[in-house]
Image (cartoon, rainbow, N blue to C red):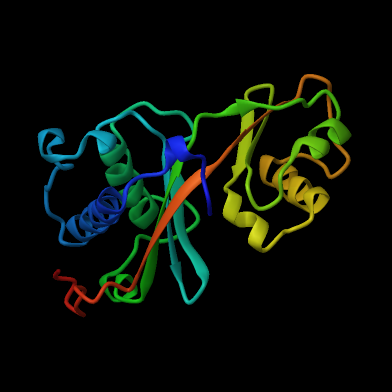
Length: 204
């Protein structure tokens, strides 16, 4: 998914970030106490505070996805923790097993800053959405939900996109309120498909 120029990482940083995520998962599988990478060893753009999501899929089916919408730590550190959360602490799934990791595809999405969009009515929000580009956050009275931009690949119609997101937030299809808030963002997304370095023993 394309992102604004200000959010796109260079090729070396993208590759390193994927390996940070993979190392975090392999550390968890080995029950090791490995820590996130030392910031002093990282390129400058991975030492900036940015938000990220890490997604695991197996044969195209979701196997874990965790992340943050608001930047609160160094990007490489954020990816490390989100990778471990996606593999072992996503409440929708059991912890990832070594044999599953060997078959899993890994994706890291780096988020641009959230941009508030008009949401005083559902039509107003729908008129602002850019299918295929925008990730969307909706919030109301302390609860919120988001879809990453990649969700457009399976839900390309804006009305359906918003309807499914409302369901994720626990709202009725026909619910809206004047105090609903909404933000959009873009992602710089990088993927690693079954890295050749993996072995069936889980070693890298």
